[in-house]
Length: 69
Image (cartoon, rainbow, N blue to C red; front, side):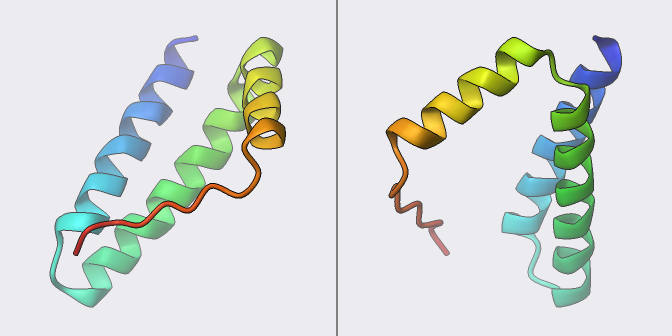
């Protein structure tokens, strides 16, 4: 459970850095770290969390999320 919280925290930090950094290579690096940590955290997540995520994706399939620049 602790590893899951660590990877989710790293994912959140990497996403924040990706949005805030102006340099292209640092932003790309942060995006790669965020994707890797998110995949690891989804692998380590309990089955109930995975089912809730799947249900949310099935209920709201066409959500358009835009980030402010």
